[in-house]
Length: 258
Image 1 (tube, rainbow, N blue to C red):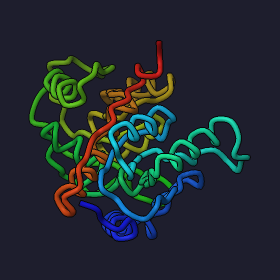
Image 2: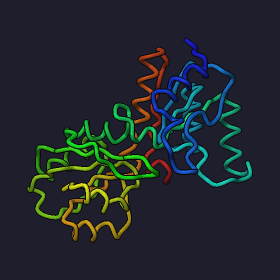
Image 3: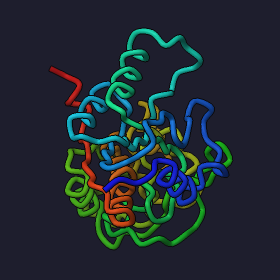
Image 4: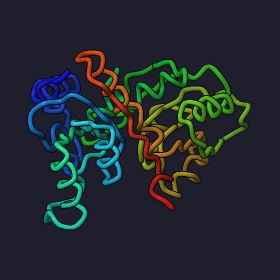
């Protein structure tokens, strides 16, 4: 089965509202690289690395869905790694589509909503963090202890996490604010929203003593591991809507180390 590339990308643009959600200037949302015009197999990955491109080609994909696209640097010449990535994709007829903030904030297919749902966190507020003028994150209630939340997170993420408890691990996790990726520096904003526990991917060292001073539980689940949910959901969506074969390219940080 083959679907017109423009049809697929227009569908994704509409679902994710890529034209109306602001983002960081380096995040180019939408179609980043076209192919010959058709899609028969989809791959999804978190990062637009050279390894991800080659792995997608090995699956036979002609469309690669990314959260962190291939264009993150400022203006640069197409040399070195930038050339190699583009050449590999173009030689393999691989289109590349990226969705950064639009995929983080989506209420159904977004990283935050899906991570919170998988952990059994029940949404209790629409308030979010201010990021480039967008309300970001999911605020909800976890019906268990801090230790139980940590266990649930490790199961859902499939990875170890870092926890910094303001009190005992046996205390209730309470109101939990989830913001995937590298949102540790938004801890103060999250605390101001009344959360008892703040879950994000990674942060700075100063986040740890600050969380203690604020009386907020802080959990780092890993930037990568907290952001696999959205691209997986998009891959399954395209499979359901268009019948396209789909594969997830799992490249956690350890994949880049010998």
